[in-house]
Image 1: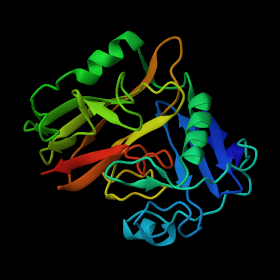
Image 2: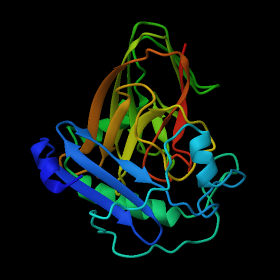
Image 3: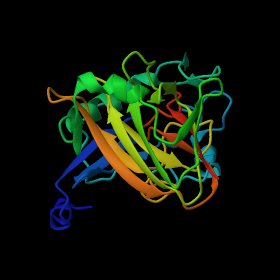
Image 4: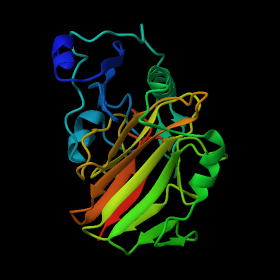
Length: 276
């Protein structure tokens, strides 16, 4: 998309973060009250695959995502400025999963966090974030033993905090649970307040039909219309960036909520979302 077209379509600005030598790029555009991102994955079979999973060229489409081997657009800048070392396998995920290059994921997320700092639609005072991450949603049945939050009403509302105070890295916290399974009734109107508490990386919240094991790149078109909180950058002196979204859980099924930043779902930043 040309820059003049971006201006004429009322987008407020553009940001492209790329790593040309590895074939990864995030292109995101800041529109009123929303942020969009498109991660692309290179076609190197196996160099960024989760241990025990097929390479990107097979697993991405098998999981229902769009092809992720697109090159960096020729008219996109490359502010990342060169290559990121591709290290060996490092244990990062849950259940013995491996992630081949956390340094690349961290580098992309850190640069996005800096670029998006202060641009979130909402701000939450830092001293309120921990309480919000522990707050029980109205009308929910919380089972800490199974890590499940079940809603039965037609109106669902909850807060999701990325990297909540005291929580492990690459996790979400909802109602005091880490990456809980969330169950909502079909047809329910769902309101999600997403807060990024990470001090130096961008994160997002999105519902996908893809299931683990995840590959490095993930699509950013939500499986349920409207179920994407965008990308939120680093906190500022005003507080943590946040966004509130509303969507209807129209189609029954088993989904996952993930952080769509490259590598983050692969490193464990995801949980089950069921509409029944």
